[in-house]
Image: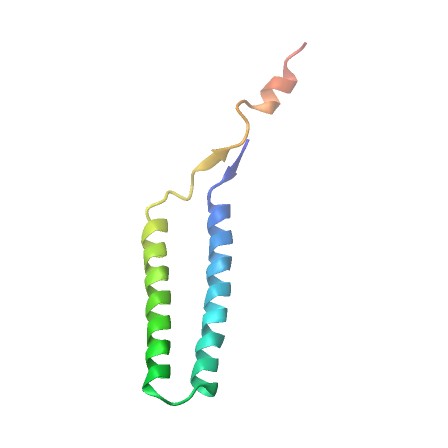
Length: 86
């Protein structure tokens, strides 16, 4: 009995989608409501660069994992144990 590792990958992808959703609105508000100065532009570029670096590093680490593995949550098989007579 176990949990497939790819369930954690789907949870991770949901967090990435939420992160990208908030990133879009942060950049939108910085551009729309921020002052049109070089400082605001540098903040947007810095924010997007750091976010892109985080996503790239995360992609590099997660691409090395075999997502088809099963995480065992029980040390033995319950079906064979319950079928044995006492």
